[in-house]
Every structure is written in structure tokens, then in C-alpha cells.
Length: 327
Image (cartoon, rainbow, N blue to C red; front, side):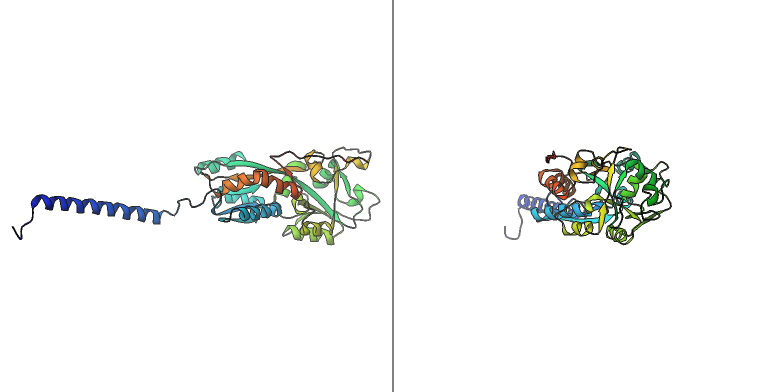
């Protein structure tokens, strides 16, 4: 029977070849699909790479949190970009980032815009911050009532002499870090009746520039996030404090003693004695447990909250022990 093929054997061989081809084809298609799927998630809660957008008022504390997180999780790479508040919100809305750090929650319109893109924002409160008021070293006025401050921001008081007739200083110059910053927005929302800053208001290019301006100009009144001057173990914060004075505020319209005035120290922020307080949030629109979710959980957890405590801010998720010192 040489030269002839068994029909049954040939049929079995052909069937095996067809199955092998189908298996090869399926494997190839899966490989091509994997190569072409650029949207496939590559990060986990403790590894991968993400970009986050951060309100520049909180650069010192977020830099510390990111560096510590990456030190613990060696395969994690978080790339923060520090911007004015308005630009950070815009990054979330246009989906250029899915994690942001802000000093306010989203508005209803902002939340709706994000949900329209099939994303659900998750908000994690991580700290209580404050707005600090700083003046030149030569300014003898270091105490203001909240009512006096509101008059300054509403343009009804325009000179230091109106606050203290014996003051050697002249017209007040109000200085913010940026017109679109969270500190400027806070003042407009909380302290100004018409939501419009007075004409004697100016913006610097950065927090460093703001502090330098106040240090060089006797009539300046600077408005800054306390995070830049709250960490007494940080050489940069100490350097800033050596250049300026920090004002004390009283919520009492007619304080009888200087003990009614409080500076934005951690204990006074926690006790609500200092009036210009605000919360700090991490907002994530990740649809899964990615690196942004892991970072938010870390900052809100024990280790992250201890970093916030050390920085001079008030942790949001752990109690602060207030120690009273007797005379």
C-alpha cells in the first residue's frame, strides 16, 4: 500500500492542524489586543505612575507626603504639579488628571461635569488648614479684630492710621500669591460682602515672592496659606518667619486684653479660636483602586496624619491632644 494515505488518518491530521491554527490565531489576536490597549490600567494602590494636580498653597506638605510615600513604596511614582486653585479644578474637569488636592469640595456644577464623563468623584478630608496674615517687621500693628480685617478687605479701611492713629505707616497694600489662588477665593467668599477685592489689592508671582514683598514693604498686608510658615522643623519655613510678622486675630469685636487674639498655631486652629480656617481635601475620580486611591488612603491613614501633625496643620482623621501649660 506504499504511496497511499489512510483517509481516516488524514482526516484526523487535518483536524489537528485546524485546531492548532485556531489556537495560534486566538493567541495572536489576544497579544495584538493587549498591545493596542493603551487605556489598560498599569498602576495599583502602591505601584505605577500617576500625575496629580495640587493647589500650590499646599506644596510643602504634599511634597513631604509624596516623598515619604515613594520611600515606602519603591515602585510608586507620583508626579505632582502645583498650580493656583482654578487651574487645579480645570485639570479635574477636563480629565487631564484624576487626583487633585484642594482646599474646598467640588461645587454641584463641577461634580455634575465630572459625572457626565462617567466618573464619580471621591472626596477625602485630610487636614484643617488656616489663612495667615503677615506684615513687615517694622509694622507695630500685630493685632486685628475680625471686624477690622473685614473692613480692610471690603475697602472701608485703607490705611494703617485708620486702625491705629499712632501708626507711622501709610496706605495698606494687600498682597496675595495669585489672583486665582485659593487664599484669594477664601477671602472673597468669607470676608467680602460684594465678593470683589478692593483696588489696593495686588498679586505676586509665588509664595516666595509674596513673602519677599512683605519683607521689603512696610505698608504690605500679605495673605498666605499657613502651611508655608507652620512647620518649625523646616528650614524654609523658619527662613520665611524670620523675614515677617504673623498677625493675631480676635473674633471679639471689642477685646479687652491681648489674650483674646490668636495666631494661626496648630492648637488654636484645632480649638477654632483662630477664625480663618479651611479644610484640605484629596479628590479622586479614579474608577478603580489605583495609585491615586492608594495615596489618598495613605495620607488619610495613621502615617500620613502624623506627617500633617508634624507640619503644624491639624489632622482631619486623628485626634489632636491639646496640652495646657500652667504659669
